[in-house]
Amino acid sequence: MPDTSFALLDNALRHAPEGSVIEVNLRARQESRRRTAAIEVRDKGPGFPPEFLPHAFERFRRADPGRARKQGGAGLGLALVASIAHAHGGKAEAGNHPEGGARVSIELPLRPPA
Ligand SMILES: Nc1ncnc2c1ncn2[C@@H]1O[C@H](COP(=O)(O)OP(=O)(O)OP(=O)(O)O)[C@@H](O)[C@H]1O
Ligand SMILES: [Mg+2]
Image (tube, rainbow, N blue to C red):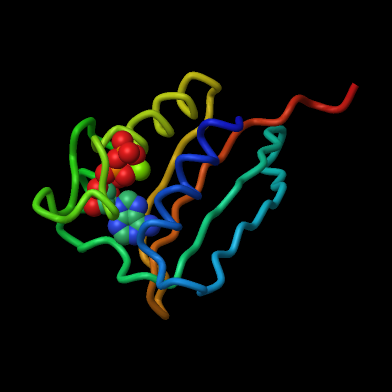
């Protein structure tokens, strides 16, 4: 899923303070017979405004449309991430870390072992 994870890295790079660490975690999880892998990108920027979170995956939505281009584009990246994740039977989630910063994850089903 190079496009989806790239969209999350692009967002993190736009919002995180210059030089700060952006964490990318990958974990597998088994829930009864369903095995999934989740990629989570976490940055140390301002995070999502809480009132924006319910709309984060809507097309053309931006938390602050007036902000400079450096921090925002068309508002399509997260919508694409969610629709690609859904098309593969997975899901996307956005939130803020309790210690600050945005975290966005993509969870995808893994093929059962042969
Ligand atoms: N890591 C983040 N930290 C804070 N806000 C974020 C972060 N990622 C996304 N956002 C907010 O969510 C909005 C939607 O993100 P999305 O990736 O869909 O669009 P975009 O980055 O503005 O444009 P595009 O991805 O199409 O170039 C952003 O405009 C920004 O307001
Ligand atoms: Mg984006």
